[in-house]
Image 1: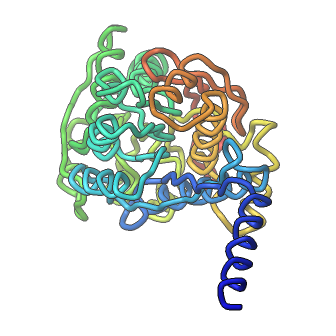
Image 2: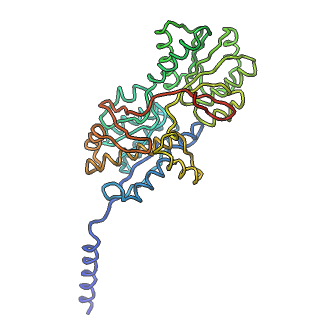
Image 3: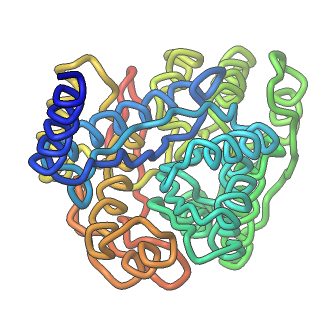
Length: 368
């Protein structure tokens, strides 16, 4: 009797296995960026976009019929942390990473991902060297390049502020210095020289001495290559000292945190930024979904969502998740995403829209 029961149990297991078909395997992917600290606002955007993309793709059947599982990694915008994070992702079997945010993190991690067969698409990294010197064919970006942004700002300073004395500042980070250098090169090429060029330490709280120097130079325009915490404090100090100079900066100031630091002193600050993805017709439904859930619906939420969409479609086209096949599909295809049709060149750069000018005014950023 016991043998008959054991036999019946084995038959039942076999029949259930045949009826259910082969088991589906989860596909682990990751979003990596600054989830804590002074740049956490950007990480929150990336996380919101990634979570929604995974939910939507899984609801539509996953990738090649298999569900995505999202890993979340905090790299603190640091190279060492990003390297550690990238190695952790290898251990988790991750096939794709939407990230990182800061240049130092993106570049350091790319070295690890390339050696491990992991595709990386950064939704935010604009440093030209990220793709110009990429360590492998699986490294891509869904962001415009800083040299494009620098040329736009250099032309503005040379053509619209031709009579003003210009100070070019940067915070010594890869992002800030790269951007300031690109601005200087273009402005100088067009025949205008800066009155002052200076690199300051990021993370400071007192920039009164720096602003005093700006006043002594009688500058009328301050170009700042750097991030919102320092830019907000410098703009506040300019206001306190009565320095009536225009501040011009890059895309890192396109965040509510800049206004939370600078307040009304930030009025008139000019920011170069790609076309706001929220203005793109194909993004409106996602913006509504994110906002209704109380999640960020700003640029990096949308570009992170689009990065995951592009990778998922490339994996479908490749019929699998191997780096070689997916990278080839990304180079060869055009992908329908929340920010429109996306394609990548042989360098790993994308065709996302270029930069335009915005102005901070009473807590809002308005298109110029």
